Length: 235
Image (cartoon, rainbow, N blue to C red; front, side):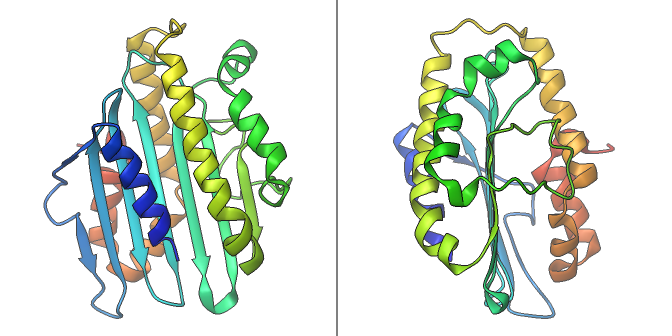
């Protein structure tokens, strides 16, 4: 379901000079001992970003997942990029979240960085649901213009592919423009805010339960703290 998205993102990253990095041992791939489920992850070194991670879970008709988060270098205060796509094939159910994830909610910051996402929110009405997310506070590390959908095959097949491509393009443009704009948040504060993002997200991540059901508690706990949100690690 999401292989084309994975290929598009990896192609973009490579064109931008990205190079793959090693993952913590045993976390790059895991196969379920109970089913045919397999999860694969990639970590990228991309110019202008301190960390860019990508994950693809294939559990056949029961579940398909595609997830990615891009963390800009600390000298850029622009938003993180967050993608979370889930397809439950047997139920023909899509959950999609595409957002520029703001470090702060202040008006000047939002005015500076969110015109591109505001445009997408208007262009893709199928993906601008007023329904709120259940696991997260929409006022922390999420924007008001995120592309969010609980839909079905129509959204998955017709709306999402073009929205995903437009979303990636808009985020690259945001990053390119940010190179020419002086950050208003000092690098040490950006570092602290990105670390808080990891801690906040690890506490609420709804996918952790899914990963545990497929790959076991021990592996999924490592995956959560060592790969998905490493600043949340208790060590």
